[in-house]
Image 1 (cartoon, protein in one colour):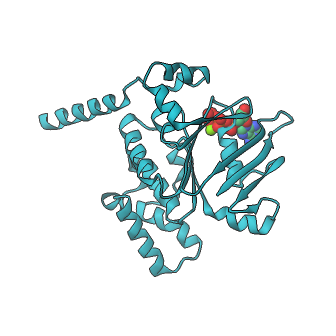
Image 2 (cartoon, rainbow, N blue to C red):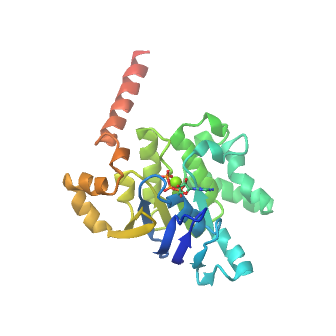
Image 3 (cartoon, rainbow, N blue to C red):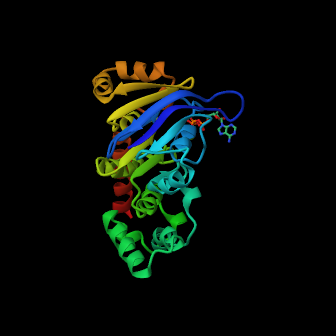
Length: 264
Ligand SMILES: Nc1ncnc2c1ncn2[C@@H]1O[C@H](COP(=O)(O)OP(=O)(O)OP(=O)(O)O)[C@@H](O)[C@H]1O
Ligand SMILES: [Mg+2]
């Protein structure tokens, strides 16, 4: 379990987060949304121990952030994936990308090979394994980015707007992937997209430095009607909504591609 206890933080004298408490239970998926600049990424960086809180504490599996050495070790249980997949690659092939971190950690060669093969199978990367990461589609890139973090077997995964840069088809690919991960690892999913936010067992809104908790059932209920749009609108996130049917748009693009390829 990972917890923020009464956290406060500001980059300057202006506080961004004020007395925030948040808990992620084992294998739970928490989704977090809120307007631009409300502090979602800041909260993720605090949770991952990359930033230090000015008030309150982070607790990972009962190890508190003031137990410096033990906490530093514990931080390795958290994997984080950011929105722009292009900033996350270092090597020249998908296979090497998967192996890179393990190599750096000094994982023994046979074990490394085994884990790379396992990851390729798990994420269906067989056809992509020798491709250069920069030649992949946005969705494929994010899939590789997520796979290259999960290869460390973290207990916690933070996904900070993992589909923000993606077209609707790639978004669907990543959404399916998150859906499959759900229940197998603890996840904090930061997003502006309703269908992603809805994946959360618990949903949080961050605004004016405060967290507002919403039970998933309530949001699902609201999503049945236009109320849901007002609901998001009230929280200043309506401007991020896709045209209402991203799935339809995606199918249309696929149909269009098919039509084009059969004509050639
Ligand atoms: N390194 C930094 N130094 C100073 N201010 C920062 C720094 N990083 C972020 N901020 C400011 O802190 C506030 C919160 O930023 P943060 O990136 O956490 O918001 P966010 O909710 O993730 O926004 P977005 O939806 O755009 O990703 C913003 O006003 C931002 O300008
Ligand atoms: Mg952010």
